[in-house]
Image 1: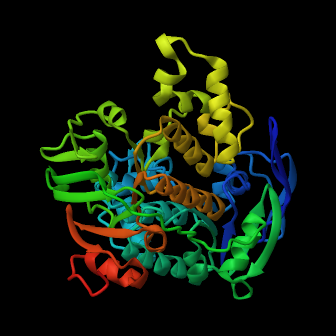
Image 2: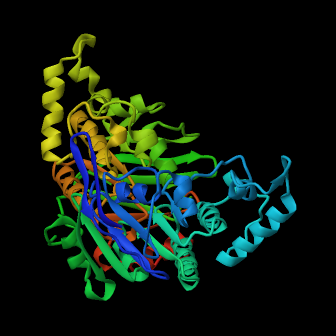
Length: 494
């Protein structure tokens, strides 16, 4: 890709960006949210047309006016949100739009044999008759990879492929990618998890503010150098943990239970504390957060705040009590994507911003403007739709609406998933600030370096229960957490 340019109303997304991918290599594409990565990939996938620039494959210029043209050119895009039909089988999804048929009759036998061959080529046995909704996230990802191979893709783009995978599934993904490399396929790998980049990439291309900062061999880079290329400044610490005086317990839950997902969970979050809650995918972390926030009803158990027993039946009850939740899925649960950023900010704050049901426009705009400045939210204006923001800026809008509500307990569920190191750093600083004000912060995360770097204390869940507690966080390791997460014995790192 040479000299790729793309502008939207009021925004220059790409300014003459170059990208070069070799056969049989993994090229990591890095940059902050809003740096232009998604726009560049959409152009490569035929979803958007560039304003200028050329794309060459094997030295020959190609035109990619639509996704079908990109597929025919041997380009496969695996987006973070998979393009699968849950009610259809793996085989049906694989051949959707490319059915082997004669006079309208689908040849299911040959399709099944080819499906099995593709899964064998990738190295993951999946029953072609299994409905996609019954597959694990890792298996669904394999189906997406198989779709690319079915169309003879020689270039495969993976956008945040490990975001929802367990550590073991990530290891399997590494094996699959190495097998693709061995078959001469070039892989563009987009991830905000820098550890993965050093494990997987041969070279790294960095974008910043729509411009190509540079491309380097992975052997030429350190973690600090990589971060500096992305954010144009050095970060003194990746996890700027600041210890605040820890006071009395504020939020206390005892014996929370809901089916098999949450079983007799008890926890306490103190004033000034960041309590980390972690575990493998499916351990019950998010389900516990939903009970604390009233999004689900507990079958039994009690919740108290500052010694006062709460009756939390709905999120409205939790909000009134001073509890807020930054959901794991900010797009479907944290924001109304079709509304403006200002409207999203105002939704949980209408009682203050619109007394007697009358919206005070100036008050609303002034309040939001303060957070736009303090949180460095990158928007074109208050009327910009939430759907058009990058992931990091969407997360900041969610943060702004809860900060305006001045909640006493803030539950962060995967607060930095899918956002860049610069935005992560700002969220960590905000956690420190909240703790310094005596707030109770519960941070749910599957990022073990983040859990170790930002927590005062760590609880580990396994199969719906609290498996163990780590109090000496500075002496703990990722292995200590994983041991508890898979149901092992507690270690000396308590």
